Image 1 (cartoon, helix red, strand yellow):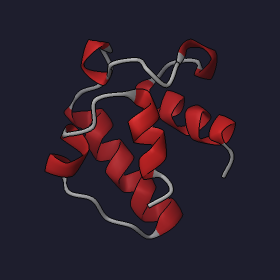
Image 2 (cartoon, one colour; image 1 turned 90 degrees about the vertical axis):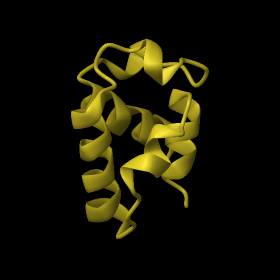
Image 3 (cartoon, rainbow, N blue to C red; image 1 turned 180 degrees about the horizontal axis):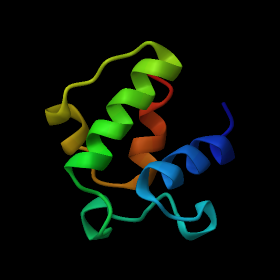
Length: 73
């Protein structure tokens, strides 16, 4: 999965346009980064990569770039 594809998936979860996202954007500054987005990301990771993360693990992530990096784990 390319970085662009990752950003598109994250944008979809955050209900934003991929062009609006930058690696250094703070997730807690985004209105749409909430418990629903966390659960959506967990479901995406399970479905796409057969990986499961706990919400606590995801909530430790601070930036969009770190979230995209998790897609490689």
